[in-house]
Image (tube, rainbow, N blue to C red):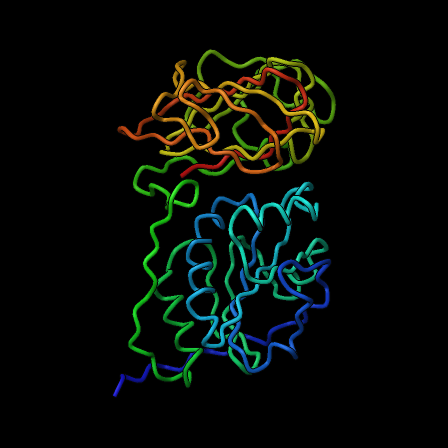
Length: 328
């Protein structure tokens, strides 16, 4: 006989999904229609590096447990303005291999109905429509899967089944937590920190910026002609630059062209040199790449010892919009 486990607490009822502004991979789902199935609700926004790194597990669970009654439901609640675009979300869902239903939540109706505050956030719902557990942020994947297994049984017996083994690659690979000393930061004036260009940010108007000779750890600067709005910094003339002092294995930049048909070429340096073997997925060894879509770009993945480095990206064309920088 398998050992009994304590019943999971009841944290509330699965709220209405009627506020969805669209659906991908499925016709609209309803609370009534999901009754009798265990449901895993995954709040996401497609440029969030924390969600991207959790996605291999959610995909694996969706595949492993679909025949046993699990419904995985993605809820895409946008962080940035461009993530409201149905075309952008549809492309991201396809490119990231998301095959389960996704509700687009542009008005934050489902987000507020759950009282949610985080990307990613997982809510575990039993067959009676009761929320029995939640997980905010990355990690605790084994415990999450064991809870899925518990919801698919009587709810009191934990089945003696194996958990998935995930070997995530590329941008989905786990962060190097032991060497991660740089937090996420934003390029818009509403949420940015540690901006180091002399004179500070001039909000909402084109301004010529300069970068200091040296940057302190986790400080950043612009040089060239930029317009800094609430969410993003937009380059107004070619050869603008972003510099960032960081301590992490990986560096990502969420960015995109201001005009969809106008790709923006760029060049990346680390400590003044091309990245070579330390280039990310969206850059070659010489540090060159092109911004063609509004998404997260992996620019640096180091393979040697991790230390403080200075990252620089120079845009050879105008019109890029930079939103946030994240690390791994």
